[in-house]
Structure formats: structure tokens, C-alpha cells
Length: 112
Image 1 (cartoon, one colour):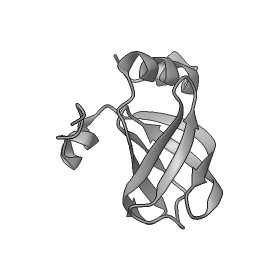
Image 2 (cartoon, rainbow, N blue to C red):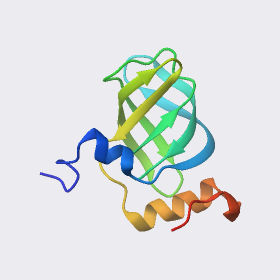
Image 3 (cartoon, helix red, strand yellow):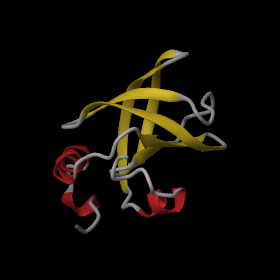
Image 4 (spheres, helix red, strand yellow):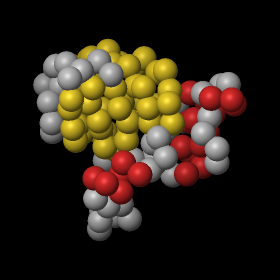
């Protein structure tokens, strides 16, 4: 069992979310390539704000700076937003390096 396997949805929501402005093309298992906009991200997952065609359980592969390709699946939807959980937790040092890339302005970054 992985280190994050016993986390509840509440625990996942408590993970530090970092606001980002990251347009991305994801590989959707049924719909092929899809353009999405990631508006926040944590070591456990991310939220997009333009997910009208996605539903709970949908799986995608997203390419992130530093991290590379990682699989994620939709755990909730509301209006045009959707929350994704990564298949694995991103290592802290990789996550912080990714945030530095996604948020080049240090004033926008959450305190560490």
C-alpha cells in the first residue's frame, strides 16, 4: 500500500494548493487530446476550470514541468470545474521545483 493510500478526500483537500495559470493538453483515455486550464495544484492533484465535458472517474495523463507525465483521475466535478487526484504523490522537492517553474513570480507563491 502506498504512503498516500489511507488519505481521505478531506485530507487531500487540506494539502497546500498553489494557484497557477497553466494551460495544458492532456491525454484523455476516451476523448484523446484535450486542452484544459489548471488553476491550482498540490502534490496530490490539481483543479481545472474548464472541464464541462469531464465526469467523475475520467482518467488523463498530464505533462507537468519537472515531474513529466503523470496519470490523474477526476474525483469531483462542479459546473465547469473538476478536481483531479494524481495516481501517485509527487515528491516534495520535485513539487517545489515545479511550483517555481509554474509561478515564476515569488510574490504569488504560498509560504513554504
